[in-house]
Image (tube, rainbow, N blue to C red; front, side):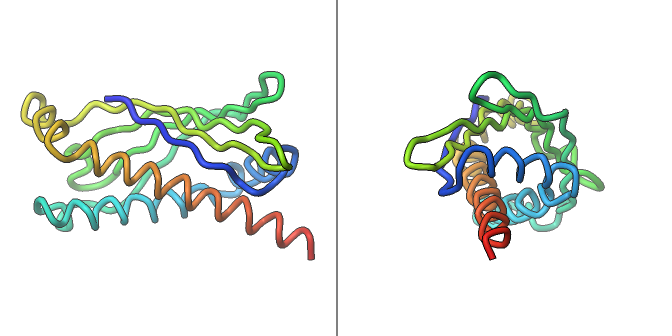
Length: 156
């Protein structure tokens, strides 16, 4: 299944690029990941026993790659620990590019395969894809907060 979302960050591209490099090295990328996962679970609570399963999020990523006026960070996002195999693994690219008026377009394009074979595919079509979309939106919103907060701190 494919997921995609984007948001404009009110920070210049050079600042966003520098901050993205800093947070991927310093571990700040984990907080938006964990928050987004928790928000996704809050939605899942309404449809099943998800709260009884693991909440540990593991994020692996490659080096930030620059292509002209864009940067791309490739990542794998998965639930670790007991019950982790009951959740999909997300492989995605986070990209940033200038977005006029001094902003930066932050975009995530990714794919995941629902666990549990045909049952997981059916659940995904019925409801879980909406949970995935909400989780991706929450992740981008959290990442936007980290990028914006860093720029404000540097301005002080």
